[in-house]
Amino acid sequence: MLREPERTEPSTGDEAVGAVVADPSTGRGGNIVREIAGRAWDGLHDPWRVLPLVLIAAFASRAAWLSLPTGSLIFDEAYYVNAARIILGTTVPAGEHYAGSPFGLDPNLEHPPLGKVLIALSMAVFGDNGLAYRLPSLVFGMVALGALFLVVRAAGETAWLGILAVGLFAFDNLSFVHGRIGTLDMPVLACILLGAWCALRERWFLAGVCLAFGTLFKLTALYGLLAVLLLVAIGLIALWRRERRVRLADFRPSAVLLASYAIVFIVGLGILDSRFTAYPNPLDHLRHMLEYGANLHWGHGLPSVCVTNESTPWQWLVNDCQMGYLRVATTVTVNGAAVATTPTVDFRGAMNPVLLGALPLAMLFTLWSAWRTGSVLARWSVAWAAANYLPYVFLAVVAQRITYIYYFLPVIPAVAVAIAILLRRANLPRFVMWGFVAVYLAGFAAYFPFRQIP
Image 1 (cartoon, one colour):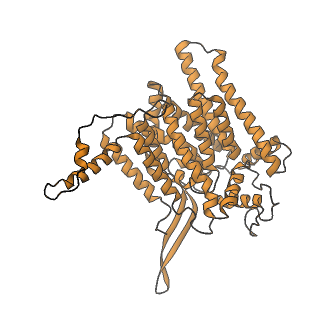
Image 2: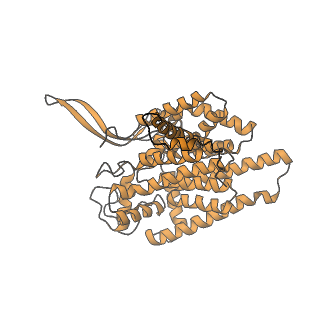
């Protein structure tokens, strides 16, 4: 059971007092106001009432002005939305991505078709507009938030720590932006987080299925699979240290996980390819996707400064090389001369700076917690961050692979959990946690893409 038993307090009879109609002669009208305020405050002490409030705030901020700016494609929507249009048989204007491609087939062959098919399905139902092609990311973004809470609870931690981690994840700028634009990244993240939750619940077959569906959106879900396998390996090492032996049966979870993952991915890709691509078998398409990724490399060594939108993984840790997804500005003129430019819409690929500022201390404390206390959640945070970040460092250094700052998105849940562990487990004064939350929300507001109310 994920839900904790609700605490009940004996009745004192005060309810009857609060129900009295205001009487100017007795001053009892103030009792009603005080009781309403008191009940509202008491409700905030119940995590199962606070969690819906956090999720509602996250949903409202993402859904607000979802279709704006009208007629504009944000960031990689220029690829995925146009691919969905081709799948639907809609003409793409000349000069835009995939114009002239054969109708009915996915032209975006560097990724599996599932994400574009889902966007196309939404557009078929709701029309060719911003609401339709961003709705899947909105839904999967909310699923990702819920999945992170389930991960925390499955690891044996409290609901309050889960709520704090979800809030930090929800109000990071990169998580927020990708939770409301029509790209593939949030569906991938939602699926692999669900896979992590299933693994923590020892539902290995379902974990493989969830991770496979993530890979049917984008191959980067492989790092989620790596994270789960790394967590299993850490558990086997702990077992060896404790019992000085590892039995063959202890490898059964990994075997079930990998088998279900491979079957669902290969069969799923084959079904999608048979309808939405011209590949005769899924292995040919997989080979193309891997070769495409391998060919994305720097031409003359790693850059020391930001070059267009590309960046190195170590630059992400300081929010360097931020990406401009979409910027709409108004120009202020005086006597016909432009004197200032004010942004009205500014979607950026960047993390909440407060999250990155807390990352070093939080990850070190979480690493210590994983080693010293054996915390399952701390182990998950370390394994998830390592598996979703270090491969890009390796690829950048060894293969000089081109990387982008938004590749850091899958790492953010692990960082949010690490910060939550630090704030809740380091015996810090309570005002430190509330002060951090306040500054964190200020960082979110500073990067909020709508700089003026539309």
